[in-house]
Length: 141
Image 1 (cartoon, rainbow, N blue to C red):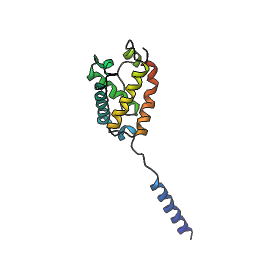
Image 2: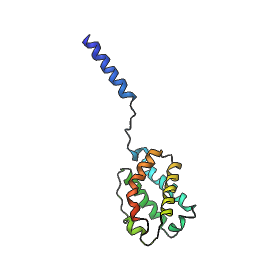
Image 3: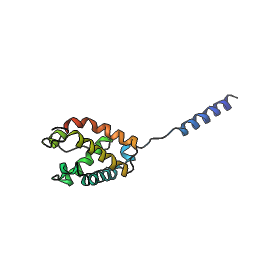
Image 4: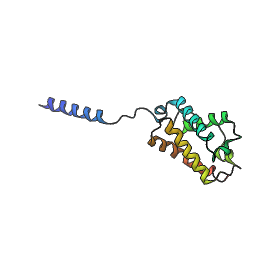
């Protein structure tokens, strides 16, 4: 009797564990690793290039450098095995005069890029939460 109760307990516990969602992959892995970071970055660059409000802020940018550094920042934001090697956001945005509307529009473009690349909205929110502290170093600098 003890043996059959123990067996039932083990079976019930196993069934409960199997029914729980498994998130064995990190966000970095779910997004496709380095290739995923680059795909999101490229989609973001494309979104920016077609936006009349935001594009002027990037018109003279070195797009190759932006691609590399944003991809690094994204990788860091999702706890990937990366290190951001670019300049501070304050230094990068100093003198650009980015206002609230342009900043918010850029966030919308990033969200559109992530959506295009199949990033789930909850993961988008996780990423944006990591980027949010940079806001003060970007607006009105």
